[in-house]
Length: 64
Image 1: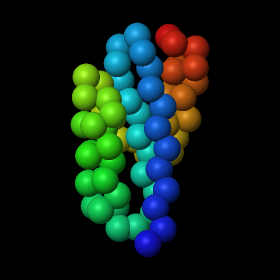
Image 2: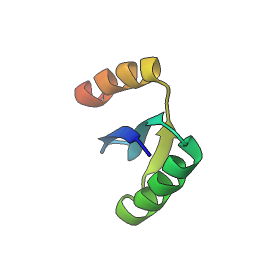
Image 3: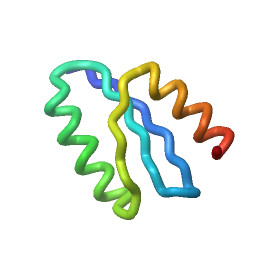
Image 4: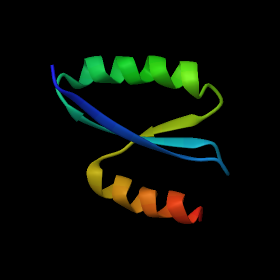
């Protein structure tokens, strides 16, 4: 099983952006959900497609 995902976080509003690519997405999603609740329990998580992730990455880096 090939899994690939990346995440970016913004401290100011405690938001985690996650992009999932690979299959099966449901199994990857379950693993990410467990990781999120364990590592970042106070953060909101947003699953994004590629283009919004790139736009969000710019906002996260600039912390707008």
